[in-house]
Length: 309
Image (cartoon, rainbow, N blue to C red):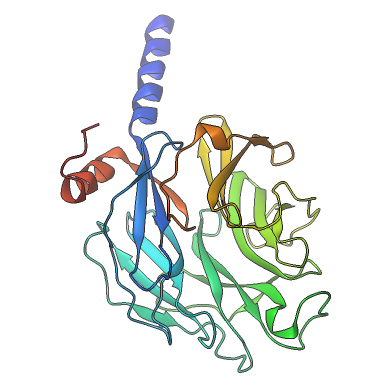
């Protein structure tokens, strides 16, 4: 009986692992074409679908930068994105059940109560299974609000947050992170119960690199901001767990490549860039674990000459 249980558990574990695939939301410069995606069966080697899934129609500039996607417990995919470099008081939003048919796009005006807001950059979605809601964080500049440091007043960012359960009603925006410097591109990661990591970009000169902070709650407060684990001129971190370690993908924009750090504890990092392949032209979004069946369906629709898996 014991041997049978061990075999059964092993079969279930293997089946569970083999059923997993990954999508990586993306855009190509100049970001006016719309949502692109990569796919992977192992979290290391990525292929472009070579199609646009959703063309942006909201915002002053009607671009789609920094697309962040999360799948809810009901299976619906939610997407948010930067809709303009400057001027918008919110970000774009749409949803889909199958990533082929999309809801009507909406502008979510999260900073409408702050009329001097310069921008709303890189909204990032996180489903908080502890609070049973979605947390959306983004970077905005409100001139004169914070000590400037090395930054120009119209480039002195802090992170803000809203929450929603249904993407119809949203809590009022509130300050999410003020680490004492200009910060953008933050990503919430749940390591385990009451153990959360925030991967963030220190956007000050000459830093412009990636760091981590720690909390026991997805809403913060965040403490112990680390020294940088990336080189300067890096941004747009995307984090995914693959087997027993976390992979942090990020855009090394001066080198014009994607780099990847692996970690088990978010304190020790190993450069594994030479172990991954990312298509040229890919710009940062988020990595979403999904069922392999969904990826197969999308491959069949958009990549007719691709080998099956």
